[in-house]
Length: 378
Image 1 (cartoon, one colour):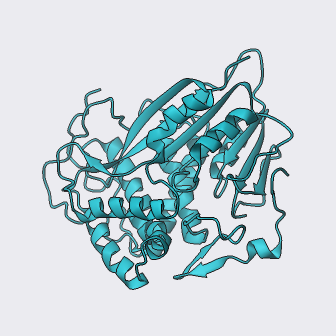
Image 2 (cartoon, rainbow, N blue to C red; image 1 turned 90 degrees about the horizontal axis):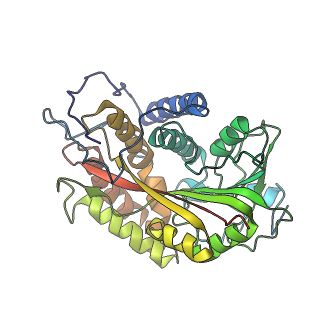
Image 3 (spheres, rainbow, N blue to C red; image 1 turned 45 degrees about the vertical axis):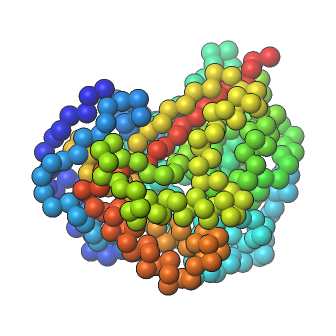
């Protein structure tokens, strides 16, 4: 596919965001509305993939600071919602899960993170052309049965899926009970740990996981448990980012703040017994677990609004909000606990990273892996 150059429209996708709070609220409101609108529709456009032409950047203008107003930032051990689970830990001004607090899960669960997760859902619907998943789930001879959303977060994907598939029973599990109370009747949320043994007394037709990199220590076990928990013919799909960021034209330099951030995130995750590059292995690990028809598509998320194409420019806008806008939440626990940095050291470093992430002269993009496979139908 040829990606052509188009002149920038000065007012397109560049709202006058006065404060960090306004930026987040604007992004979240738009994300929620668009995600709802696109839940049942698809478009001809999707994020560029690594199999397509290089992304083309705009050629004129002062692109040093893009979006500068953006803020600095019933199974297994399933638990009921009680006071201990709701007593979230507070570290460096952010709150974190209380259930199994010794687990090496490092992202916060506060309102800022919840808004980011909802925004990220919108970003994925744009990436996939309005789709919630790529797996070919529907079979003529049988309706779709139970679905597991592993690591559901705010539950926004599970809610959209349950709304568009009323014939299914959807279960979303997460370490934090941060999901809404008013739900489709075919949806349930539980507090649980994905890394425990799965002891569900029923099978699923679809296991879905999004942005779980850094959350799971034993990926082969996860895929094996998913395989064992699926009905014959069922599907698994993982949608995930990986490091480092890349550029097609060499503008993302080795040793730059973005490049250093990628290396440090990877090192810190390793120190936690986690991998920040786990998505690179999903395809082979699914095959090793016994899945067939395993397919991988790698999309590109532009780091900001640098692409010339308006559709890809919009992807970059939301990607910048998703990553640069919540850089502290994504990095703080990893850097302070995994690398031994102080809060002040982290913030000084992240200020440099944000500057680079907003610089439209740096034509960086993030690899987004979508990998899906099927349990043999026998």
